Length: 195
Image 1 (cartoon, one colour):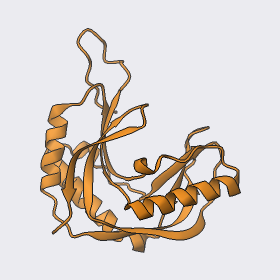
Image 2 (cartoon, helix red, strand yellow):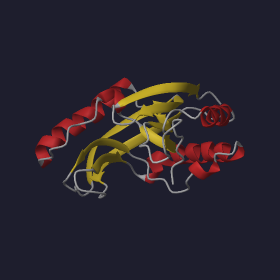
Image 3 (spheres, rainbow, N blue to C red):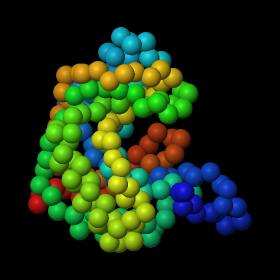
Image 4 (cartoon, rainbow, N blue to C red):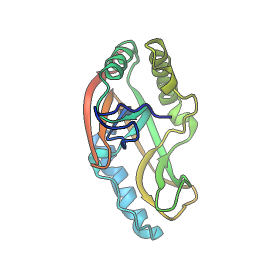
């Protein structure tokens, strides 16, 4: 269950407006390539969903909750966790697309990859999850992880199929404030990988 902060005078049932997450973003070249995959397969597969804007393409590492307003304590704890993680830059490779069947009109059509091409990503995410646990945010460090980058949402469910590999070297991770329903991501902290 997501923690919610309420505005004074309003009940806790106010819809969340803000999301916190840790993410990695593709290089400009990889983002353009991923967008090309989305555009060409959208047409080839008859998908109606609109591809995400290139600057919104990302891989979520840890979702840190949906809120009404930004919870400063969670933001500060997340910054502390990020500062405690050291890692060298690593490569990610996404070489296939597929849909996650979730709900009508909302099936994510995503880039995925073989575990071998994403092993360092998974290890890094695990280390970040352990750091989150040490600062009291362990409930957000879910052990299950299917590395992916969402390209669009659609009614149709597409079976896995190979694509030209989309690869880049991850040089930083980002604490992101997402404005729900406004398709806007605001970086709150960037942490370089130089370990």
